[in-house]
Amino acid sequence: MDNEKLIFCGNNKELLPEELIAKSNESNGGWAFRIPSLINSNGTLIAAINKSDCGSDWGYIELAVRTSEDGGETWSDIQTIASPPARETMFNNSCYSSAFLIDPCMALAPNGDVIMLVDFYPECKGLHNRKLLDKKKVPYSMYKNKMYPALYDRDGKFYLVIEDGIVLNNKLKETDYRVADWKGSLYKGEEYVGNIYINGKTNENPINELGVETTFGAPLKAPKRNYIFMLRSSDNGKTWSDPVDITKDFLIKEDGVFAGIAPGVGLTTADGRIIMPLYVDRKETISIYSIDNGETWHRMTQQPYSCNTDEWQAVQSPDGVIIGLGRQKRYGKTPMSISHDGGKHWVKAKPTALYAPKCQKSVISIGNYVFCSHASERKRENGVITIGRFRRIKGKTVGIDWLSEVEINHGFFAYSCLTQIDDEHIGVLYEAQPSSYILFRKYKISDLIG
Image (cartoon, rainbow, N blue to C red; front, side):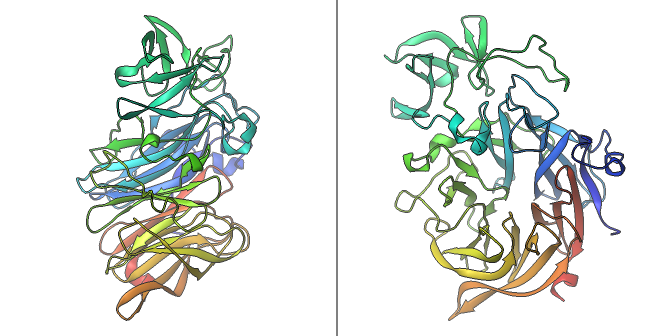
């Protein structure tokens, strides 16, 4: 198709055919790519992605971005914005001796900053091997009316990391240990003693075949579970802050070891509330929000779960009602929930007549119209944008009427992300191969709504 642009292209021969790998270069390339996020930041498009060693949901996974200042016609060179600590990396999914960052989700704050939330796991295999996760270790504890991260030694003794990385022992006395950075580098005095997110000893060769500097496990370790980290850009994606752990702001015991971000984009409401979609291991969703440009995050304790399932995205109608669309367990209608109070409480609605397989979908709204990108077959195939209109009864939004659909591609289609480019266009970033081939397409809004 004429307006397709290749944004991220892998170079791993196990994941892509040679004719596609030939398109990988210094501007768009890396080992493997998955899970796109796309946002318009004050006229600049930002495309974010998982950049990994093997294309799986574990292994060595970094965060990367590209930006466009001309509506998606040209793009900056790829930029890696965050890299996790690793003990070992390989070009295959048999290796999980690394921490990893996964599933970026961006939102535009009222002050113009771009907020990115992302999952972070210590060295493990995430939810693909739950036996490796620390289900009985508390990840945070209260000290002087604030929550702080917990660490444990090999005997199970408890430590706390407070301001400036200072480590307190189980008697709340200051130790010689200090956590020096977001990656978990631990020092004892001036001596580096390993990483709190890594398990065992390092390899003999600290620089491996991927060119990644590896490390080794520290005597104190963070619980192996999912964490939510936040990055911020104040210059439309050119530079990014170091990741900051925000999990303690909203985590509750019932979430277990996984409260993860639903990839795509968040929703910034008309009154300036940033709502980010999360979900938990029990397959329910979480709605967290910020009213101060992402400085702090909140979750309603009266209704901790959002009456939906799995990965989800949300849109707001002109009358302020918020509709969340989820990921169904199998091919069929899409789960839907509704909030009438800015995402504080949610009501479970009947599934909406948007048919899709079990796969993430993206949804945005422009005025009365709703646009949803998704696979349209029983498998992850044949991407479409389905166009709908908010349905109102007695002047109140109660759902979405789906009107028509436009083809994105024919063949494999998985995760995607939509954004409005300008008054006349929307764009979609999507996975066009089972791994590592991420395309962008641009559409005239008038062509979509007829």
